[in-house]
Amino acid sequence: MICVSLGRTRHSAFLEGHRQLAEQKAELVELRVDWIRRRPDIGRLLKDRPTPVVVTCRRKEDRGLWMGDEDQRRAVLREAIIGGAEYVDIEEDIAKSIPRYGKTQRIVSYHNFDETPGELYNIYERMTQCDPDVIKIVTMANSPTDNVRILEMAEAAQIPTVAFCMGEFGIPSRILCARTGAPFTYAGFSREREMAPGQLTFAEVRNLYRYNKITKNTKVFGVIGDPIAHSKSPLLHNAAFRKIGFDGVYLPLRIPADVLKVSLQEYEKLGFQGFSVTIPHKEDVLDFADSPDVQSDLIGAANTLFKVGTEWHATNTDYDAIIETINDAMVAAKLDQPSFKDKRVLILGAGGVARAAACAMQQQDANVVITNRTRNRAKVLAEELGCRTTLWANRGSEQCDILINCTSVGMHPNVDETPYEQHWLNESMLVFDTVYTPENTLLLKHARLRGCPTASGIEMFIRQAAHQFKLFTGQEPPMEYMIETLRRSLSAVRS
Image (cartoon, rainbow, N blue to C red; front, side, top):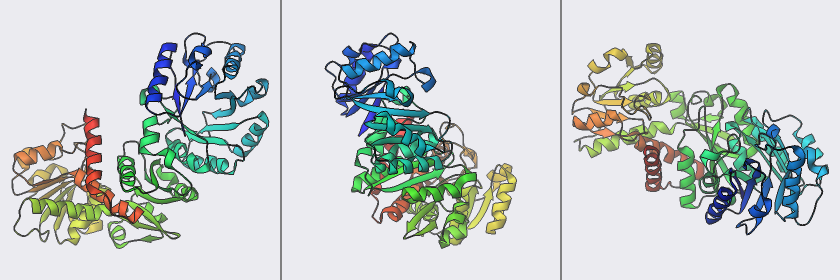
């Protein structure tokens, strides 16, 4: 079950928001009455309520908005109990001063906005002495491993326990607490009214992550990177899971580079079966993998980890996705004999995607040239792969049959930029831009105006994700649905 937190400054707005949530099929609503500018009229809020409620009134020291004194606040909580609210949230330190009455269930809560303390089990044991129906322990995650510690504590709890971490690091625990038997998790009414750091919206928790469908048998996957909030992978994979009826959930996992290995080791305890890998971890994950495949070993980087038995395997699905995307563009351009052999390929960029593109093209017997805004990075990559490099300033004079942009130039929000001037393009050149936000970058618009065959980043992104999907699930990916999902999301961003 999902408890949706609702905070408004006026009673009428509270009632309207509650009505809207009921229409959206919310099962439980938290009324954050400390948001009301004057003394809350609990009777008015509880009368004819359209859903069960949790009444919460937070003090300033608990990051709440209550302006009155403590005696008044406790009186509000007692009113909610007498009024028959389904739940009342009572902080641990005052729980013993507010007696049980009627059928109202007591959520005894502990919040720590600074850290996830080491004594989580002691805190839990202490709270069991406060006559709780539900124990709620919410802490700030300062590292990925804090998720593991709080979920392990919740797993061992004997009393129904809601336990998760706040902040961007803590997002996985907000969803995976479902696997510990939590009676509910918390979500926000909307992105604009976030009640706590890292809180997801009701729509995200219910529709994107399908919280109410998660059980101990649900398989868990994620995308690791830093930063990670921008990633479209959770949208894509969760939509595909839903489409084929696969019992899985796919999460965004922010992991800093300096704690990569220990975080992945700890996440194994939560049952993760696979990871998509993005910046800055594509090279370092090879040290974690038990069995890197030929492609990832050749490239020196992986974008996928998946578990087979007890071993972690690494691969790079960018490799095949790049070849397939360019090959399809050649076929669409009706080239007589689509082939990469002896083609002159100019690659813009020297990061992970550029590395995969260079390796893929070389293995197809193309002649590869790398250029990058930071000269030394291009030089190092070219030396590793045994191909040529050219200065960034000279990229326009380098003759090529295939141009591949692997830089972020032209990516949203900088959509009026291009890494390659329009007058350098000619109609015999195939132009492939790996940027997919937006799908039609300025580079691709210029290329089409010049009559060039083109390939977009959205095609590559879907293909690499589809290969990952098959490795994760063992099933064929719903390609058309994945394309439709991604394009609809990108369209929503533009609007």
